Length: 421
Image (cartoon, rainbow, N blue to C red):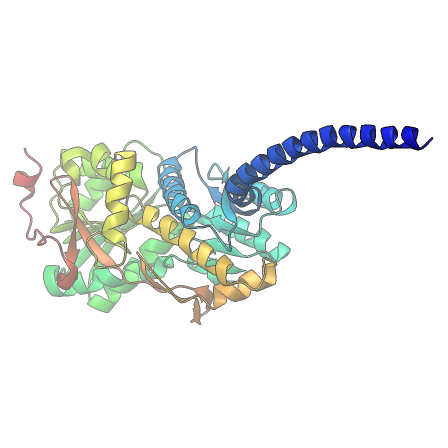
């Protein structure tokens, strides 16, 4: 009996040894796997723990050139942000939606981003009508919306406390223009050609106020329907009244066609001024050709302005996309960093905490300092400077104010020579 128990005990030890050997191998494999996971888990966790922000832009239709540049700029900034650790160790994700330039589409996709995608805030906004519609939805849902472009003054005049605008309101685009006209051109008369839209009418209205301030007599104001292909009847009337300056409140294709047809019928004012968006895009010079020469236009940004990252952004965008960005791209790039900054400082990702963080923004960007303030009838509105640029040999040169200029302005202008008759 004792021998049997002893034998049983030895056998049990032998089996246990084999179990221990197998257990050691299993443990070794487990440690190897855990070691590998330790190396990759920070990356996996970074990718899986995301913060989603909805970006609404016109990616098809007449405004697609603007929307595409802004999307490309958002994407550049986003890569940099996530490459630097994201937001609070989480990956920042931009969900891009195409508003097609239509307010009803913008309204629907804003609602989708909020209710289905559960984004923590909205960004984007280009055309005024779409931006207004999206802002209305954001306010109704009490979700922060940072506008990077849409400039209509009334958007930040509704008392919407969840809506913030980075870009200038339309009424302030002409502020830099007034000093150039007063000190350099000194015109006595003007003609205004305006697109028959809210923005076109407002831009013309603001320029008329500038003319009044400067003692310039406005000889004619003529509205047109966007997309027409024959401006010669309007331009013939401009030629008859023979103004010192011609101000055009137009988008890119209309502006280019206006200049081409002005050259064809030989209108020679002292100066042509592109008063609204589109005249700074590289596509404007491509479409207008030689007729773009020496036109001036106001802008809130140029790569020659000595601001952080301005030239660096311009160079990297050009290298990456093989085209020059204008201020629309710069606004989107800056907006991405304002979003990152606000989310980084927010106490939580709850809408009210993000709103409070946006209100407390004090950030230097390639557009200049960003701070959302209230003035006149506006709330949550950023203030920016404006500058004057001129097309010279198909390149957009910063000419005003003088202290920032990277080229001397060309004035007076010999149109016969410039337009190559």
